[in-house]
Length: 393
Image (cartoon, rainbow, N blue to C red; front, side, top):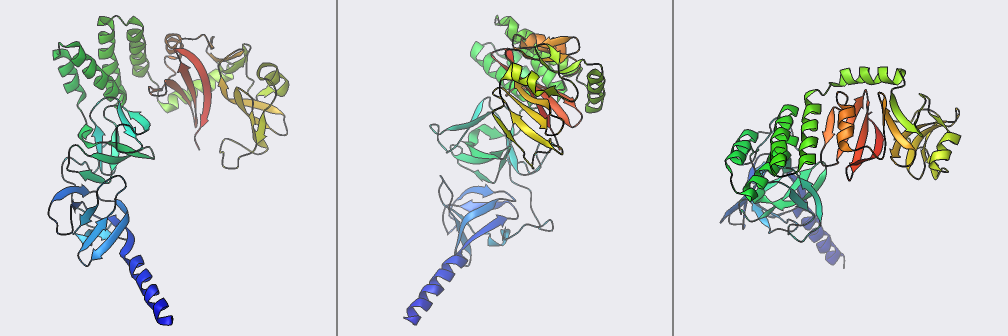
């Protein structure tokens, strides 16, 4: 019996030693079998191999979710931990090790509206849709051009067809190709890529792309789209830096020219009274303190209404709006104008020009910075729908 248990323990220990989690210290070729018959891809530096098994002294087998097994013969490239002292070669083309856009191995989306899916097939759930020129971190690059590849973006992981990844598209080349195109379908395809790449570029390039789109919109009887694009370009051209905008907003606050409003009444610097809030927003739904919320100071709590969130002072009994849906009596004062649920995107851009310093096209939102905070103005169906004060700590 003891001998049997001993054998079992040995087998379990041997299996445990065979299973490991290792890092790739330098770009490493993946093969289709343990004999290294065919190269099928490459693992990038920093790739974390979670399901890896040493099948003999010279070969590791990697089991990949949703993909075929791969084999690594360059076992000296695998480490339990990575170190800055590790020697690493440059990744093979087309992989980009680092550039001005991303600091680890990556590729860029080369088509417009690329969908990242939960699994590597066209029927899987869409996790997000990416603009042209978005950098995506990769830990493995398959040589099969019809394969899917796992990518990471803003902390999320999903899958895209590898054929839609490559070097970053060039905005000027896209504009040239658009101007040469005569087929309406080609023009539409190029203009989508131009606008999306513009949003993934510097503000000057974004403004250039918006100008090209405005011309396209004019030619295709979309005057409202053209107007918005031109206004967005103008806003970006006069966008203030963080220090300038912080001073502007502070002066406007002191002059009572900036802030949340209820029934056209500007929020006092210390906040509204509970009676004022309840008159417009109804009764409090929830109140709680979050120690991890850096926006909360001593004796402060999050106060939740049906359409708003406040920071309430437990002693002073004052309440400062933090998030509010723009409806009924709610609004926001900018200089001598109050924007509300009837305010269009065009009107907001005209009012906020010189203050807006960030445009978030995917979120359909605009931001005005104020020191370590930003006010975010979100739009739905062309009208202002929500204003949120976001704190950075």
